[in-house]
Image 1 (cartoon, rainbow, N blue to C red):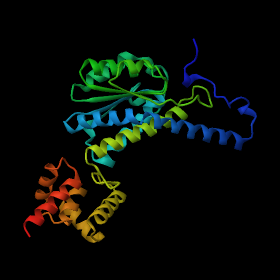
Image 2: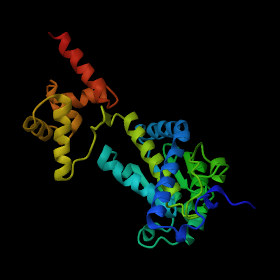
Image 3: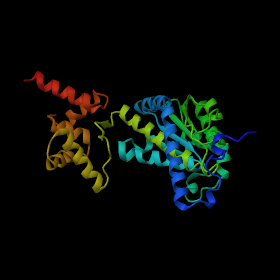
Image 4: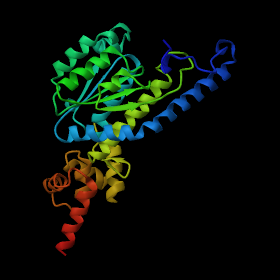
Length: 304
């Protein structure tokens, strides 16, 4: 049987072990750029997946990542950033890794073949029709990823498959298929390289679009961030200052009044009577700051 694309030999890899170091690095860099470019063809599928995930989160459901090996690391990197960057509650983002947390210090290969573990993990997480599961696998045939997809689908959850081989078995199971058709790896089969790069880009794009759908982004600012360190407190104040047009001391004072909510602080700076009034505006605008600001401006205009 012919090797899949992720296992094939790269056309420029012959003699790489005797090339000059700079030549090797140029080849590796070019291969990464080529792999990243493969994401463009997947944009329609990524957009569809982001809309489905946003619907799940908006209705009280959860976003669940399931993956093994290098793909698991890409999924983990995306998932762990969502609460801090976009304020998505941590209990609404679930990460299922082949081999469990032990895989974070010992990335053994055998656990990825354990479809049974995936089934048990999905069951233990209590997935249901309100949730959405993303399974990530370079080959698209990893038993752990397939097991997670099958069990999630059986339980009525929405499912998304991300893989780097056309015709991947995962695509026959998932509601939405995201094909990242990356070229063969310079080091054949080392999918932590090009395939992993494309996965990271695609997952970052997907989750960012989810955040935009949910109203967590305004003019390129993360207006729903969770500020839990000095750097993020400063960032939150800069965001309030930039959007509301107030100085930094005022922005910091309003953030204290808002309990740390960037959106509420911006609405207070823009004329909302109280944090409670600001929250009511946001609730009536599906948490979209732009719509809430428009409602506030309209309300102020009608009272003049």
